[in-house]
Image (cartoon, rainbow, N blue to C red; front, side, top):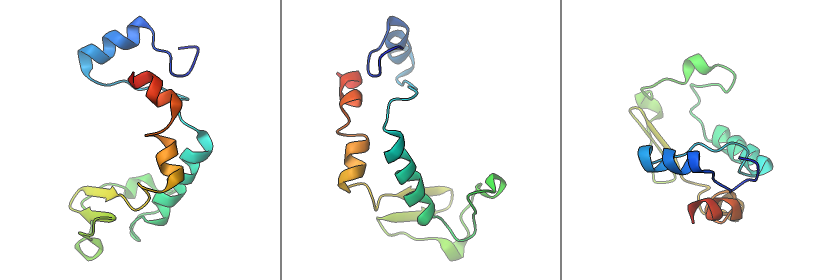
Amino acid sequence: MTTPGVLDEEHIVHFKTNGFLILCRVLDPGLLARARARLWDAALTSIWRDNPEGWNGPIPIAEEDEGRDNYRKGFRWQYRAIGTDDWMVALLPKDPCVWHVAQ
């Protein structure tokens, strides 16, 4: 892929066969860095960013949270607190390149 958002025939065939695509260098790197930083701000106290060996679950019972914005239980972590922030919406749902690929 030479132009972000432009799919070639191989991409289209892969999507039709597998139902997904992995595209590199499509989203804004600055916004991605911001999203990663916010995710780590909300991470469990028992995991550290620089220690991937500790990222496996299950989530300790003492750190479970069934709240909608930062759900953590068992092997599931769903961080939704930033999902409606303008910068986060611009990162994916309103990104012109993503829209072009989807169309």
